[in-house]
Image 1 (tube, helix red, strand yellow):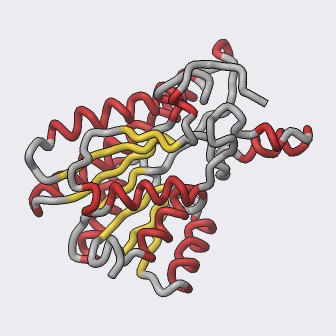
Image 2 (cartoon, rainbow, N blue to C red):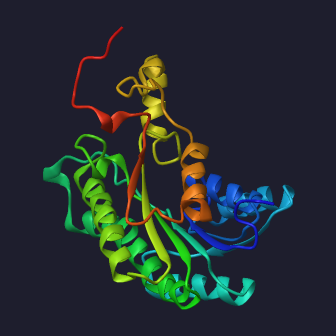
Amino acid sequence: MGRLAGKRAIVTGAASGIGRASARIFAREGASVVAVDRAEDGLAETIAMISDAGGTAMAVSADVGDEDAVAGFINTCVESYGGLDVIYANAGVSGGRVPVAEQTVDMWQDILRVNLIGPFLCIKHSAPIMAAAGKGSIVCTASVAALRANAGGPPYAASKAGVVSLVQTMCNEFFASGVRINAICPGLIETGMTKPTFDRARSRGTEGKIGQLNPTRRNGVPEEIANMALFLASDEASYVNGQSIAVDGGLTSTHPFVPKG
């Protein structure tokens, strides 16, 4: 029996990268999945992968920064699958590396809307449903950029630091409800969002230096984050609440240093 057998789960940002890997792993482990994203073609590919592997999933095209859309896909899960046990608020945008003097209010607002307001809306509309059932797990994607400088631009880092605070405060808002709220802080993971970084390194012939600053000496892959999401979503994590867990090869364990070798 799978680790999420019988559970009803939503994964946002499911058209690629960490979201796709998580939706596939959740379905493999027995969950009925609602996969959410704005990229309809990528979303269809994710659903096809799950279906081909014998899993259960449906696609919903939605913007996680739109409250009506969030309430809509949560209602879709409840109406289609009979309830909601897990939501992984993973959708995010990076904003790129724009000099501070060139950053605009509109840019900040767009990044905060997706990266921070999106998880807030997922919690707002899912946690009361879970609380009424006396149990549930909410997982959000934060970032190592929330914990240390130089892992992302200022608006991205600020939005992800907000996610870390959000899971701490919201788990107390739902004190003694049976609802657990946690975050994952990925390190450097090869996804569509980080593709420009990897492409630049490969074009310069410096691919071997990717991940050199963490003790594992490599980048991560989406499945490694999805496996943490699976743990937090499962009953195995029943005593984990209000935490932001770094999955980064050890990057955030140190202060700056000169690598050996």
